[in-house]
Length: 258
Image 1 (cartoon, helix red, strand yellow):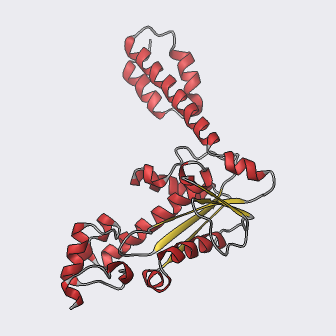
Image 2 (cartoon, rainbow, N blue to C red; image 1 turned 30 degrees about the vertical axis):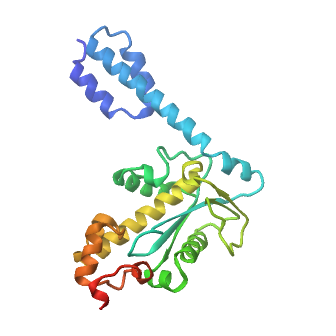
Image 3 (tube, rainbow, N blue to C red; image 1 turned 180 degrees about the vertical axis):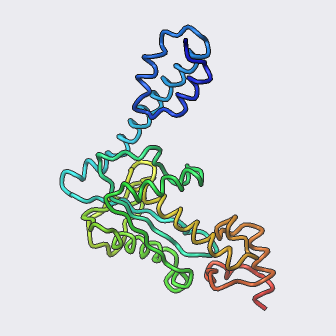
């Protein structure tokens, strides 16, 4: 007796990618329209996977190019340059070219749920990863530009395996002890920079979620410290806290200053 379409659908839903081809071969001769639809769905999954693997291969071009000379190439990126509050955070990652992390991309192009999933996968599969965190107070002391670079150098120094070359997103990092190449829009062109951007973004978002519990009046969980209208209004009402960047607030003509 033939399997019901609902049973075949459940089978497909639980099937690992590696068994999709066998699924297609098994049910290709089934003339039921519902089964034909499921076979087409399996074929589409294979097509999408192949397209994604091709995209990832194209994002390894810089790592492959420099891999002819350097053994451990790290990508580095930052998150949190523009907010009124919280630290700036940088991520660094060294990835094996033999390892594919599907849907790795610029963190800004991913949903929070997808970033969280990739964050765990990056930490599990990376040759090495690290983060660097520079506080709001330090940002006020040296300026956000220098703080950005300080966070990146920290992230690289925190790698479990020492990097001998760095790929950076757009900017050359001053005082870096290893050679580097800045890539415009690198977080969308390099797998290791993309991984670094996710490490930085997720780490910073989680810090801001923790600060939201400490300072619930500002709504950090929702805007992550950016200067939204709500955030500005709460600064006016309550004044800034120790996690605010006072250098970013100096142009706000608000009552708490008087």
